[in-house]
Image (cartoon, rainbow, N blue to C red):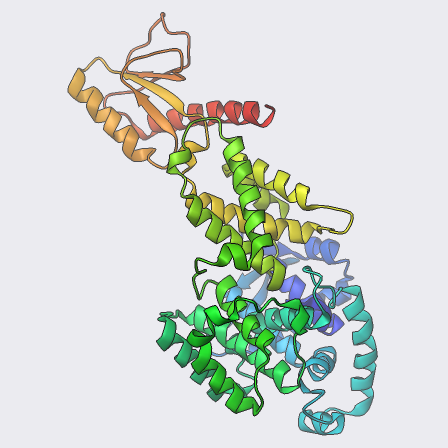
Length: 485
């Protein structure tokens, strides 16, 4: 949610409600809320009352969603969920004079007179003009026209519009005049490429097409010099049906750069596969992917290159890098440091590689904000953890199993270990050697100098817990040793 587009009180209310939603025990105290949001008792009470009134106004069922004071100074959320937060954000946007000034500036300025726009909304001139003046300041403060990829203002405008409308108004339903053409284009593309669209994927494509068409109707085009159309012939035939529908709707031909723009969105959001020419078509993004993969290779402490599907890595990392170059949209979901710490703890080796690579991208001309670094880190991490088996990225933890009940029972324990730790790099040994990290048995041995885990027969849940605890300790030591290497 772009809070700067909301009225001041609504923005505060939205943040308060979001904060209450994410309290793990369902409750929040008035003192905590007042300290967190720097509110007086009067303003805090006003915010809660306003929130409950607004939640009642947007209710779509008989289920009461509210913030209830269950005891003096203690609030409990009742039936509050992320959908209520989403609906309230959209409600606040629609009633914000700043948002309406924003909408006119970027959607209707070239399609309607200001008088006509205000008349349709039953909005008086004075608050609208005040909102317009404030909007200029807010857009500059929030770097609205700053494009990460250093493209023109039009790239930045479209990226922000898409982010706002997709997240706040799925399906861009408030622009009903475009419902028919967007549905026809999606049907044509789906028939040609067999998208098999889920509801979310359909909504995302519809939102993109809506924003794109709104800008095209206003004849706000991408500068042709910013998109290389040298490979345009590779995919124009596949997009011909959709392009024809759009041109008939607009009543003018689409510039080649705009066709490429459509293609790039379909590529970066995984609607289309990259074809065999992607190395030549996107040389910079391809080289970035190669550089990161090389760092992954160099980081490995064990053999396992043969288990890495380099082509799949190249394709998916290049897709991320193309998105950075043309369609980078920051997630509006707040990602706090504890969440990042969790990813780094679970993926220490990948995290080190990715952070070092992102640092290498910084130059005098390239500034990477903390928010962008976080989003870029997650984009790369998701590719790596999905395509590279963790087993080949870490030094194994070796467990020697030696039970007194005979070979069959020992075999049973080995199978249990393999089943329960199949997604980790645990190596169960038949013989003990210098690599062994844990001795697992039902009897202690004075001859063993490494950690011994003694289990009952059969093992109880607490026995498994003791083993997991020891594995975690050893893993932490090995990870720290690797990180300091």
